[in-house]
Amino acid sequence: MFPKLISIDTLILPTYGVLVAIGYLSGVFMAVHLAQKEGFDRERIFNLGIYLALGGMIGAKAFLIYQDRAFYWMNPSALFSRASLQSAGIFHGGLIVAIVVALWLTHRYDLPFLKTADSFAPGIALGLAIGRLGCFSAGCCWGEETDLPWGVTFTDPYANETVGVPLGTAIHPTQLYESAVDLAIFYYLYRRFSKKQFDGQIFGWFLLLYPTARFLIEFVREHVEEAFFWSHLISNAQAISAALSIIAIWLLWMSPYRHRGLIPLKIPHDKQNSRRQRAAKIPGR
Image 1 (spheres, rainbow, N blue to C red):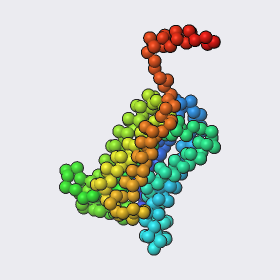
Image 2 (image 1 turned 90 degrees about the vertical axis):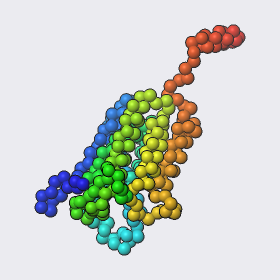
Image 3 (image 1 turned 120 degrees about the vertical axis):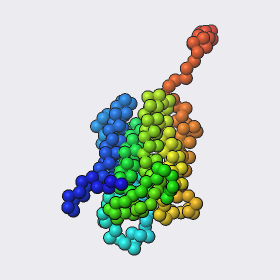
Image 4 (image 1 turned 60 degrees about the horizontal axis):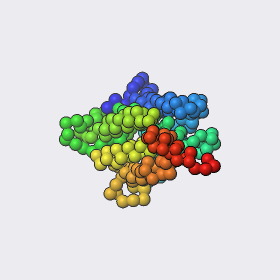
């Protein structure tokens, strides 16, 4: 749609890369902002955010290479091609690696994992909302053909050359679908953050809302990848989304952490008085 932000002779600054970078930074600064409300050290959370961003980028690239392993096995030089280097990879892969890195670093920094994850969850949604605009500008992650009035048609040969998006055909703007949903998820998580009832609640809602939205959007998204271990009835992203949703359901409704609330159980005033009166009558108290 608009893949080049700046183009001077052979020097090209891709719009995609700029928006993804803005998304990463916005997510980290949002995490720092929310973590300060929880009493965390600003510098420590910022450093953690940078490490998680790096881990996420490495994980996303690794999953992309594994997903297209047959192609890269036959064309190893493609690992260093412009298209491969500019691609951000597969988000679910980056999320999984980032969670593993977070488990390790929060233990090393002596930080409570779930409480820290709550601080990062809204920022991840915000970063995704911005990053998907980068996907739209580049043409990657495109949708299936459609005759709906809001279908978009890509015409820039550079976009086709770098990411393979079809030209001259109306397709679903799946990037915009996801960007809008991610922005709505960010708004919901941000508003709920100050009202959470237990550590892990905000993170749990992110793990439920985003994968659910991604699972549905996948039905109108074009797929060219090989499946990992399952049939082609569902995509890789849908299978991983289903697994993350199961974890989210456990965290939100069945986890013992749900019963370690930050908000104490409220007891009516008259019942408090009756309890005090009964306690006063018990000898030795």
